[in-house]
Length: 255
Image (cartoon, rainbow, N blue to C red):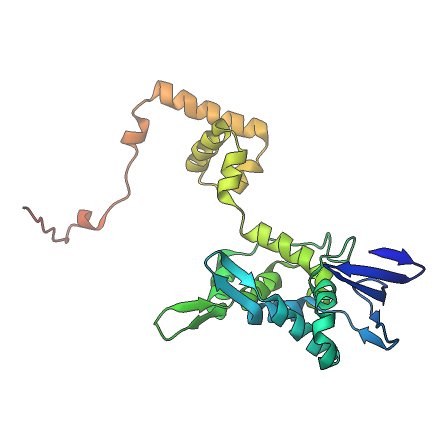
């Protein structure tokens, strides 16, 4: 992309377009070769999710997006002349699907969604198919995730260029790569987390947030217990089972 005054030359693949660009949150003026200008409004995050749901494909290599159909949906919504769709498709993809630099979506407050919110999102986004199973509507699932995690009233009105960053952050927050997390932690830290989680009944995130000195104290007490009372774990009272009830009838099956 090069700039001359407020006119930009946008190169997408082998195509070059002249536009007047004032940011992804403002109207884009497309200067066609024949002199006819087109004005495109911002493409919103919600529109992106809706189009994504209509354009998902599945191949042997995994899920993908039908770019031609996505571009057609953008051009149709923006009112571009049908006869120019083929020529304008690369610019439509740039306008709708490019994460913007230094845009409003960066740095918006987010929070992890709860187990109940995720379960509700799965329920709302699941659709029964003829085979008896369930299909997950990814656009609805992502929408519900954003609704739970984006702590910003106007997130659904963000331009898609800003929303891509917000969406990426929310997905990273709610669907962490657990294998990558484990690989990044030294084995000694993993073992310490397991011990303290078991001893205090806390989650890994809660243990990680504890003062380091407090975790050291817990580990020291656990080590002391192991030395002074090696059979302490086996002597801890177990939870009563149904078979322990005085009126229970126990049936033993032998070979």
